[in-house]
Length: 235
Image 1 (cartoon, one colour):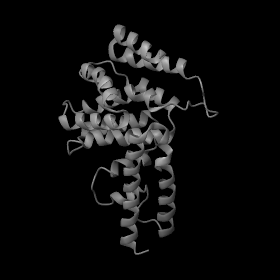
Image 2 (tube, rainbow, N blue to C red; image 1 turned 135 degrees about the vertical axis):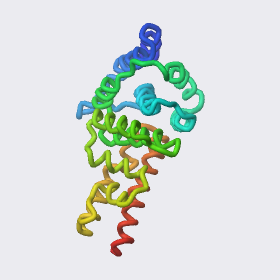
Image 3 (cartoon, rainbow, N blue to C red; image 1 turned 90 degrees about the vertical axis):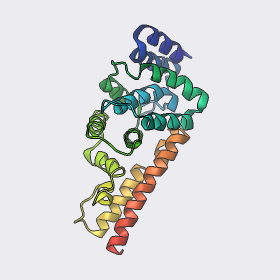
Image 4 (cartoon, rainbow, N blue to C red; image 1 turned 120 degrees about the vertical axis):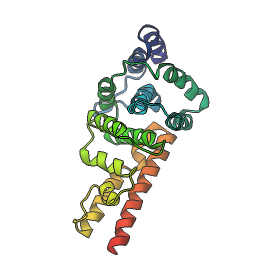
């Protein structure tokens, strides 16, 4: 319970950023088990406030807050945590959505120390979903997403792959598989195998059912891109 106590104290004295810091300091006390890789095997509870903070940065990136984007986030968190817990978390989120002081650098550094690479890919995919919820990803939102991707130390090719899943453009299938149109059929097959392994839903099982479902949707987009290229090339 240390994390919730410290989150409350942090919120009392420093508002939303303090709540986030307090929550994670408490999490460290509550869970001292580390993996041999140096990363803690954390549950989805350990990063939900920070994920909401990143969501708010994307929502506010273009200077407006759309109902569709807020609904997307709410539905995602209700699916992940249940209505009661999601409502409790959203109370902090909604009370502070227009407040300043959220540090994308601080949160990204925290995620870099706690999350596996595959989990960070899912975070960016989730944030892209928010931006696209109103039907259009604005340039300002895209720049914010690129900034967050860089802070999370994701590769350019991985960012472009996820981006292509939300933009119906010529060559999107190749961008999703992170390859050029000129590559051989064998390269297409190996690229698909590598990407399918990296984005497999099993990689985010520790985050909960909502994240597994989102990962499955992303995985299906990768499969669809591969099938499209296969059909075009006839192999």
